[in-house]
Length: 151
Ligand SMILES: CC(C)(COP(=O)(O)OP(=O)(O)OC[C@H]1O[C@@H](n2cnc3c(N)ncnc32)[C@H](O)[C@@H]1OP(=O)(O)O)[C@@H](O)C(=O)NCCC(=O)NCCS
Image (cartoon, rainbow, N blue to C red):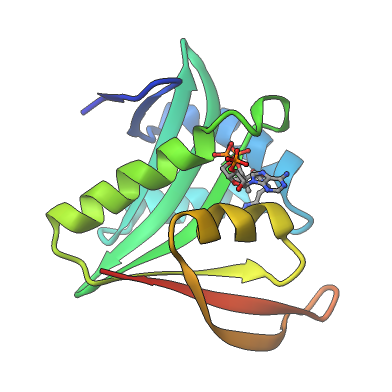
């Protein structure tokens, strides 16, 4: 399955994509997922990860779980050198289309309260803040915001 959007091709992540995904992960987060965490996701039946490719280069990814009635986005990141070009929007769009196909009524995710770029991306897609987990990111004691998009 390969789906083509304006800027990138989006396809399910393969084991051979892991190194490029890890590089983006490490460039994107203070407490990045480990290789083992991505490998665990690849094995889980409810988990899917899609990568965005520009020609042959992986430029972003999104990882999510599909649960009964709910789709939960666990991780999304775009290579810092190609941000603000609509790649995260393309990745989100494909996941929202999938949610619609599967008649999922709620799409949920968590974001750091200080992550302005992510929060404005989610707001643009209609997500609303529905909760706060105090001190969830224990490294800095930062709160997590819970966001939901109801269909
Ligand atoms: C958040 C992130 C995934 C956005 O990726 P992106 O490909 O640059 O996003 P897009 O180009 O699709 O942007 C879509 C919208 O998001 C918002 N946005 C994206 N980057 C932004 C920034 N730096 N500041 C403010 N708003 C921003 C804007 O509303 C933008 O719409 P616009 O272009 O019409 O202004 C990217 O910044 C990233 O990888 N950050 C590090 C990892 C991360 O924080 N992941 C989210 C965890 S919850």
